[in-house]
Length: 410
Image (cartoon, rainbow, N blue to C red; front, side, top):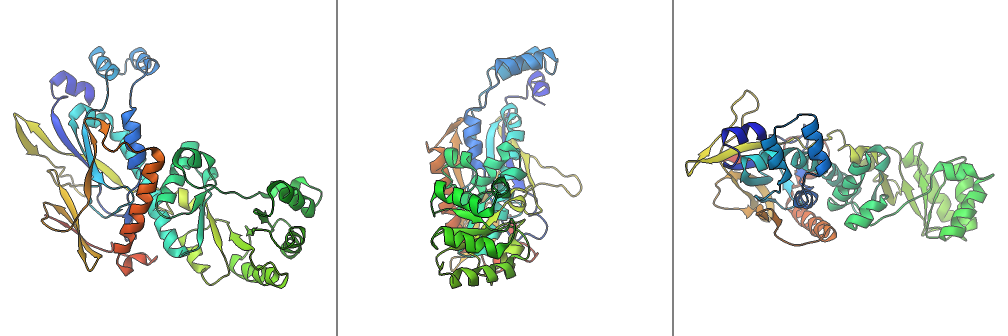
């Protein structure tokens, strides 16, 4: 597209592109917008290296004019959009890019890959936070995602309310609090479970979590309490009927005087199993596969469409009209209608009332607010916590249903 536009003289045409989901994933009542902080920092550094340009030339992917364009490429457009952590609905214009056609096209795949994945994880994480109530939630999905997605997932989950992650790179880069437990392989390394527990306690102290379901759970709990003088921070259950087992383990811990020892549960949890464990004496949840795959919805369904271009000094609205995939042309404003502090509608088009949802993010290719990667996460997490108070009660239901508020296009 860039090469053809360069040749035809259209590459420098000023354009407006919008990112939106035509609808929420089936059954979801709201979505959580995430990833813009990662995206903006990636765009600031978006360049083509000599080796990449040599590859394109050697493989004859593009012509010399396009190679020259790519060699000098730097995104210089403007971007506005929803704040990271914000709720979104069908047709919410979560990100607006104003740039030349060539620049807008060049960033499309990067933009969609970041926002679709991060928002899918954040949306799932928000539902899990609702299910968990005030209980501790840990992201533990690195082994179920590729090495880059694992870090992005930890970041997105933290923004949407998780307490920590087992991913140390997410801690180092984004400031996400980190935690961890031992695996069954550690216990199996030793001649006895008692020896394994002793080694872990000698190294980590009592502020550690002991995995107690490698062999016999009751014997393991008794050993954990005895070796720590009743002070081990937590025990973890990773198999079986977690609810009934947690009841038995809590009673045993209390009978042994370990009243402060927490119970951590893992094993393919999702928002539904978390909700089912609300009546059980569980203190902490560790969630992996379901979270990093968006809990059955691994993408937010965002698309990126040209909605307007400037031809002969006049802005022209354009829109796709194909069956089932139509879009509305023209740059749009979005606000959220509130009544008594609770959201009642998403207003998209040219609304005259409601809470403003779009804010400037980049100007002439530069990040407007010079915040660090960690500062961006802190702000996004706070914003998400704030906007969740606007969610109608029906939006907190985990059962499938329609979006909790309508989107009204004008």
